[in-house]
Length: 219
Image (cartoon, rainbow, N blue to C red):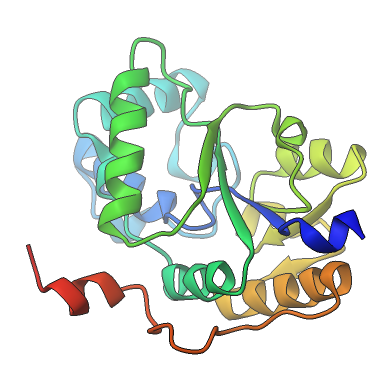
């Protein structure tokens, strides 16, 4: 009975899942290399080797992108992410943001501030947020992630994990979503299995991630 009374907790990664890190980072890498952004392919490995980056070069450019260009505040959001998360939240799913953005030494203040700014600007609903690498420690009922090492770590601890489809994670079997409509369908099914039923849109609640803007008008 206790499980039926508690919310279904959905652990949501950001980069490569809700925020399009590849698109944002591509612009900065292209400017630094003096090349056309279109020459940096979406079909890339986890380590960006197709873009000609080694570990040191990636660290340099990522540090510059986060601290100097404040990229984490301006990344494009994947289509449908905000609306799907709002519908899940309205249905009682507890949205827990779980991200390992404290990667750059001496850049934690920028990363945290820009992450919260980005979530607000893109109307992403969440109940709490965790900045950490050891994701099984947050005790979610299901996670969504794109990083191969995170998927392996989470699944090795017997967690349900949705792989958000990216070129560098297609070797993984199991739960996979290619877009946020598919994510929503999987979470509704899992949450319903735990709670018995899920009301996808509560009566009397406005739909859409822009509901607050519609109600109070633009700033």
